[in-house]
Image (cartoon, rainbow, N blue to C red; front, side, top):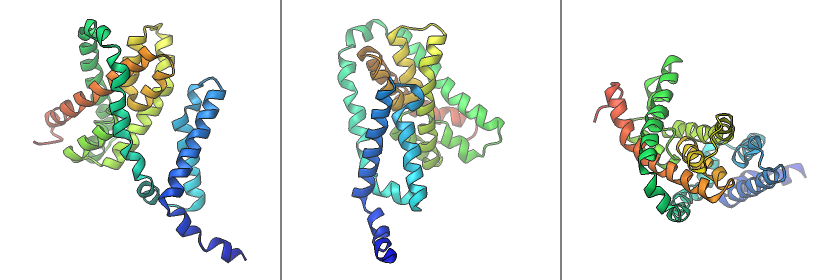
Length: 243
C-alpha cells in the first residue's frame, strides 16, 4: 500500500505545474501573513516564501536545479513586471524633471558605493576572483546582474543568490535606517530603496505610497543601467577583467 502511494511521487514533483502552483500558493499565503501583521519588515513575503519553499525542497529531496527548471516560466515574468514599473514613473515625470541633478548625484554615489563595497568586503574575507566577479553587479536588478556576471566571467547562479540576499536585506533594513536618520521625503526614501534593494525593495516601496514606489522604480531602472556600464570598467581597473 505504501509503495503504491509513493510510486508516482517522483513524477509528480517533477511536473512544472506542481512547482509553479506550490510557489504561487506559498507566496500568496506569505503575503496574507505579511498583510495581517501590518507589513512587518521581518515578514517580507519573499523572505517567508523562500524559507518555506526551501523547506519543501529539502523535505521532498528535490534538487534546486530541478525546481529551477520547473519554474522557469516565472523568470520570464520578471521582464514584463519590470517594464510595467514605467507606468507609475510616468505620473511623476514633472517632479523628476525638477530633481534630475540630485538624482544623478545620488545614482553615481550609490552605484559606485554598491560595487566597491561588495568587492572590498569580499576581498577582505579572501574571496576568489570568480566570487568577486559574481558579487560586483549584485545591486542591479536580477536579469541585468546575471547578464553582467556572464559578460565578465562571473558565476550567474551565485549572482542570483547575491541579488536575492541584497534585495531582501535592503527591503527589511532600508526603511528603518532612513527613519533613524530622520529622512522622510518619499522621493529620497523611494530612490534609495530602489537603488539598493532593486525589485524586492520596490515592491515594498509601493506599499508605502505611489510616489515612493515610482521613485524606487526609477532607482531600480537607472542603477541597473549604470551598473551594467560601470561594473566592467571597475573590474578592468582592478585587473579582474579585460575587454
